Amino acid sequence: MAITSKMVKVLRDKTQAGMMDCKKALEKTEGDMEKAVDLLRQKGLMVAAKRAGRATSEGYVETYIHAGGKLGVMVEVGCETDFVAKNYDFRAFAKDIAMHIAASTPLAISREEISPDVVSREKEIYVQQALDSGKPEAIVEKMVTGKIEKFLAEVALLEQKFIKNPELTIQDILNDLVGKMGENISIKRFARFQIGA
Image 1 (cartoon, rainbow, N blue to C red):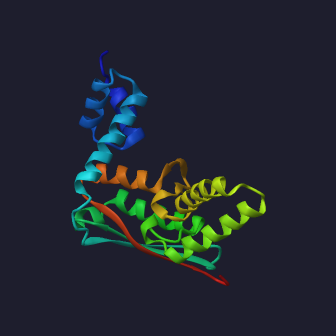
Image 2 (image 1 turned 30 degrees about the vertical axis):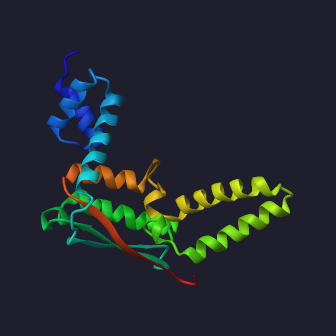
C-alpha cells in the first residue's frame, strides 16, 4: 500500500510523533492507522526505558488553582535539559499533571512511596469487611490482595487513569512524552492544598 502524505499527517496529528517516525510506522503496518499508533506508543515505551536512569536536573514547577482559590496544586516535573523545560508540550504536560492531581487526590507518585502504615490500615479494613460478610478464611486473603492492588492503583499517581483520557494512565502519558522529547522526564514531587481538608 502506498503511504500518502495525508496519512502521515493524520497519524502525526493523532500522536504528535515526528513525520519520519509516522511514515516508517505506516510503512511497517502497511497503512493500518491503529497498528501504527500502537507501534509509535511501543517505541515511546522503549525510549522511556532506555532513558529512565538519566538524571533530570532541569525542569519546571507548575501550579493549578481551582474552586475559587479553595484548592491548589504545585508539581515539580524534571527533565534533562533546559531546552525541554521550555518546550510547550513539556509545560502542557506539567499543567495537565497539576490539574489531574487536583481532581484525583493521589497519595504518592508511585506505589513504592505509599506509607506501609496506610497499606496495612487499608488491609485491616478489607479483612474485617470480608470476615463480616461471612467469607471463608481461604477466600479472604485472595479478596484482600485484589482490593489492596486496586487501592494502590487508585492512589499512586503514575498508575491512575488520566482524567482527560481514562484509557491511559499517567505513566502512559509520561512514556509518550519521553518518546517525543527524546530525554528522561520524571514527576519529582507534588503538594496538594485544600481549604478545610
